[in-house]
Amino acid sequence: MLVGHDHDYERFAPQSPAGIADAAYGIREFVVGTGGREQRAFATVRANSETRDVTSFGALELQLHPGGYDWEYLTLPGSAYADAGSGGCHNPPGAEVAHLQRGRFAARMSWRDHEGHTGVAGVASPAADASALFWFFQPDNWELQVKVLDGCAFNGHWWVYAAAATDVEYTLTVTDTATGAVARYDNPLGRRSPAITDSAAFDVCP
Image: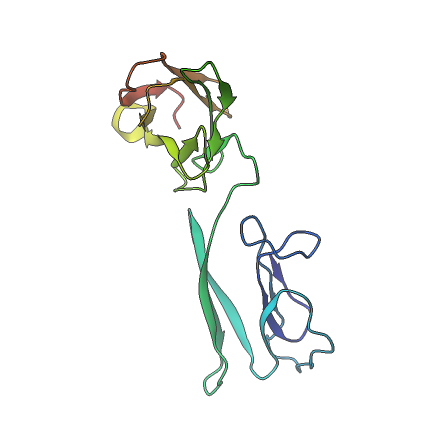
């Protein structure tokens, strides 16, 4: 979250909308009001404030990546203050849908194990804009990676590739949110999951 107006620079730790520190699912906030007018001292240091400055003028540079971001506070020459770092992206708690290719495609999974237990797969933290990781039993034990690739320039299709390390039953569905087209992939219980290499999954280019 980027905020201006206050005549200062301040960076907050990831926090919930209620202002509670949350390293796993929180949102980081930057206040950057240092464009050239006078600066004002902090009357109060609020909870989760990690660093702040009223001695320099500058601007915030952000480099955005599919799985995270880098920041650097660029100040005028001669300033003694500096701030830079990196952060990662995450899904909301309990995410069960992976949004790929900037939201164009939505991937979901369900599963059934050898004891008859069933469930909906959870989505791990984003790997990249074109790929996602799913887990069945524990968030830190990934079961399947799925990728939706833009093959329009090669054969006029979007491709779905996936690989799983499991022999449980699962159903993977990938939906094109623009057209409603669905690609479905099933693995029966007891079969070691083969790789999915569907280079004709969606005839919906561009």
